[in-house]
Length: 294
Image (cartoon, rainbow, N blue to C red; front, side, top):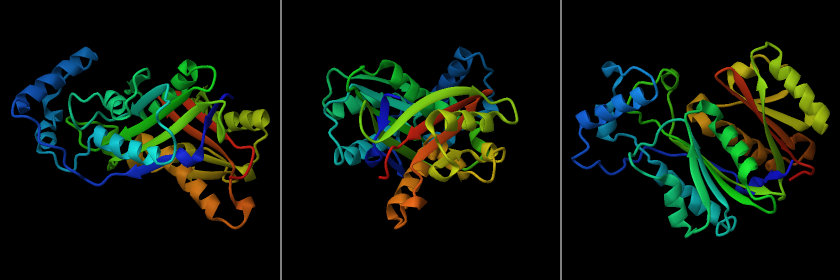
């Protein structure tokens, strides 16, 4: 493993409902519905007018834009580490931004006065968007001492009905972290696995245990409740909060790290993490290994 995540830079937070500025008058209900129809057609899906929530979306209740979240995260991370030497800025999300037309990664580049930094956003991959983003960082980060900022965000103001999201109340939440090549902290690695079998996750965890020397006492598994139901109760498992969407596994990791630091017994702190998620029949795993107690 050549990527690392320093726990001190892991920052996760919910955002209270703070209304964004009202859209300009040219952004009418009919115009946004036309945008939705074109978006559905571009993705080969039918547009169902009854699924439109544009009227509520235009009302702007409980909206928090991604740029609002990015500003808070960048400010907090900037107080912990140097952000002037980033090679990459990546945004991962499932829900769309609450504000149309905003290039969030460009905003971050401008905010940090970065001129030669590669930036893009990764979406439309459900809860595994941040796992795929980390895989992209591993692929394209410079081979020697590269440094990336990963922002993970979701918000609850949707302009159309979403069966997946509507199963739960969704919170405005975001997380940010610095990922480095050959850095200190948790050594991380992403991989995919076939999650169609009943024993898929158990088999994967056994493979990871053999590869990295993990033990149930030293490892926390973080996953969605439906995945946890298939795992052995002897494992140390933290179930993710459905309302936090893509931020959820990193929220649990942050909580576990904080609990370990507060513990007076070092054996209570779990030094290693395995984050599990799935999307469209494929499983995604993020392994975070620490060689020492934080």
